[in-house]
Length: 326
Ligand code: PMP
Image 1 (cartoon, rainbow, N blue to C red):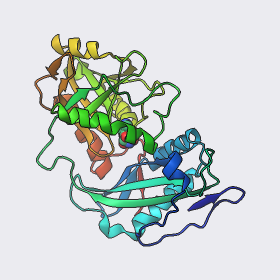
Image 2: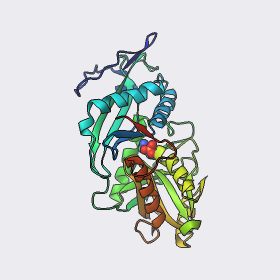
Image 3: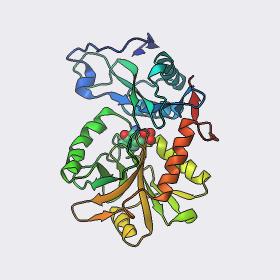
Image 4: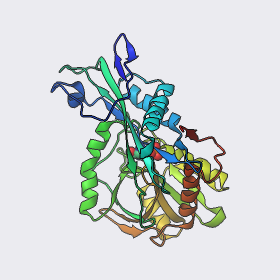
């Protein structure tokens, strides 16, 4: 679907996957007006297909567009474009448990020019690709590197938006994490460099206490972390399961000390790609520690299974999160 100044949205098409032609002065290549979303379609027990909360992705896409001075795509158009693609390519939605069709809606400037200003032309597209089970051999905890050198987002910046540049800027920290033998980077805030924000492409959760008295806490949305849809859904699921929940602020020292005295029993990350990933160990320049016993904890496992069951249609969907496509 194209957008141009004066005309608005027009020229919607469903067409075979193919390369795009691009002018060397395409404004996106120079000034990075590029935003995207990620969501999944799941095969349902009756053979149909559903996406998970696509209207939340549509709204986040609109907020990203506003932040990058791009036009907003109506929520219904965003959802309908995805539905049309899935119906066209239904055979690509896997039938296996934990497998899904990963959907990538995105928008970028198509105007040609070298002046720094919002472009007058954009293209919104949706592509998709089957996604296997994230943990084919069973859930494996990740090791994380607390980056003290690089930050992902600063106040007033684009941290809340899902824009391409945020990911470009994170690659060097991800490489630093790998150099230290860690799977993922965990970001701290830009101002004091001590508040825990989020992981590479996932939000974080901390489990305080244990059993039915556990409190499930996640860093509050301060404007510098991505408001994850999995994060939002888990706050509700945890409440539905009877846990106390909260959005809070937690420093890297709180994490280390909470781990040492046992008050933090489990930590996990959550996002569309892996749903829920336990965090097994933490490394930074000044300290390293194992989280709990290093394995997936019982609260993490329970939340993961509950969310997966809603997505796959094998449990009730009390909040109407599944959007039936087929
Ligand atoms: N944080 C970042 C930086 C991400 O890229 C993602 C993935 N979109 C998330 C968090 C998790 O968001 P969601 O649950 O909507 O996938």
